[in-house]
Amino acid sequence: MNPLPGMELVSGPSAGSSSASSRNAEAACDVGKVMTGSGFAVDNGAGQAIVNEVRPRGFNTTPTAVFLQAHEEDSYSGSWSLRGWAICADSVSGLAFSSIGHAFDDVDGMEVTGTCASGKRLLSGGHVISMIDLTAREGEIGVHNLDVTQNLVGGQSTQVEVEAERLARSDESWSLGGYAICATA
Image (cartoon, helix red, strand yellow):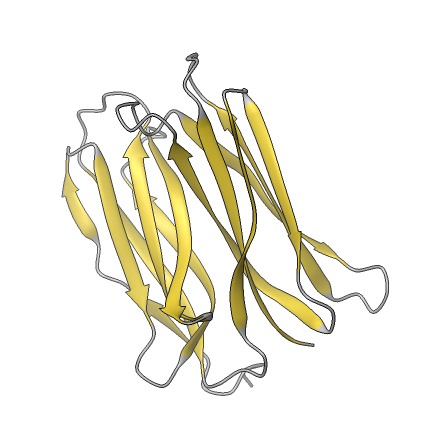
């Protein structure tokens, strides 16, 4: 039995398989469904492709799709691809996504944390990494932790924490943002 009515996994199309330095992918729920979670896979990236964006998309604050972006950490000559998944379901009470924080600086590591509103529980989280200098090379920063924590009262997951760090030595400023998908508990 599915815990959410109409729950299904939707696989988005693979975003190319070539040696281009970046990829975008999206997985979208069917009309009338909402997204409650997401995932991704980098195929043949050999540890050189870094996913720097996992962002819910939708109407107002109701998520219906996930957008993904990945970049090569270093110049990588292999062919690689990016694919996303959306966990979709029929309408979920109080479902919404929101930004949970945004930090920027030229430091080696950052963390953003956010908590769902009172009476809501966390279903999923995401992140976005951006280089402040638009001429800076993408793929220099990587997320090493997207953690869900439980509330001590009731054992419901209510908080998401995203941690990222610089993978290469540079003095470029960068930003880290996090996203939470929450629903009525």
